[in-house]
Image 1 (tube, rainbow, N blue to C red):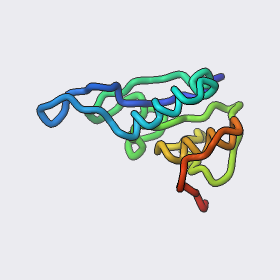
Image 2 (image 1 turned 90 degrees about the vertical axis):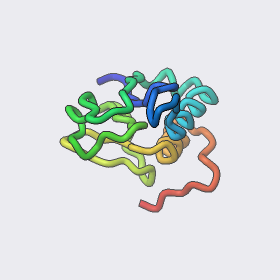
Image 3 (image 1 turned 30 degrees about the vertical axis):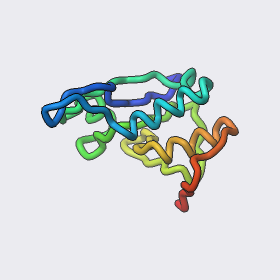
Image 4 (image 1 turned 135 degrees about the vertical axis):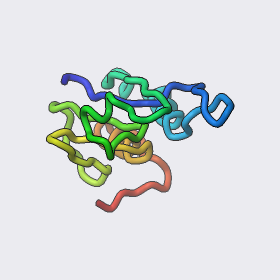
Length: 119
């Protein structure tokens, strides 16, 4: 795996009898738009709104199907205090704000306002 894998829900999915989008996935898309360097470092994998999300389950198990999820490549740095979790040898981050902290450290970018990770 050369690039990180970013799992997002596609914008405009059908749920609750209407078209919707995931606010956290939209936040990550905003981050990619602000800082193109980040977008160049990831492969984007769209997931369905319905579960099970088999692509994620195959990598991170049944309990880790959240979107957005960023799976770090072997060559990506292991940074502190940005919510990196471990499953079956894979490092991953499963929320938008911690991804923002990770990228702020990794690429020397601005951090999300008001969000600090203590562990």
